[in-house]
Length: 200
Image (cartoon, rainbow, N blue to C red; front, side, top):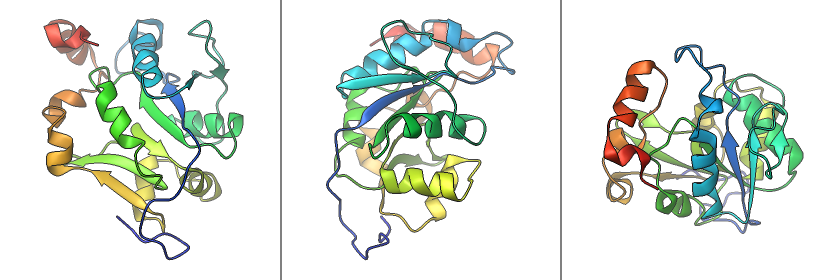
């Protein structure tokens, strides 16, 4: 955990987070549009178990009827989706989940919203998981003001950061399974061939 800009080291009060499904990628490595599958709906369902409000950062494509469809903000890639959501919900924390992380359980998402830090993110041997994280207003402001092109770079900023790691993370399952990222056809085959791939 880092010391925040105001000198505090503990959690800060926060408004209820908005759940944000990131579903605006180009899916170049997959070869077909992942966002047109059931993945965004699955991510929205898990976020809805934690957040009273859920929106979809899908470049304004309207992928999930009944949920707000958000245009991209500045930047590119996931940052554009995150900043688009920040513009739609100014001052609100965002609980972000990429639609191509289908094995992240709702219980892990619920753990991320505890505490009211600027940035709460899982961290394991392969690094942080910024597309399954809580972004408070201060973190969102830094992301925009500094024009960071990769959200993991927030780790080097002067923010109150809390890492979900070690035993606290392992209780949700092996991180390499929990954070299975569906980027290629081989990833998709691994996901769909496993019974746990479709578990809620």
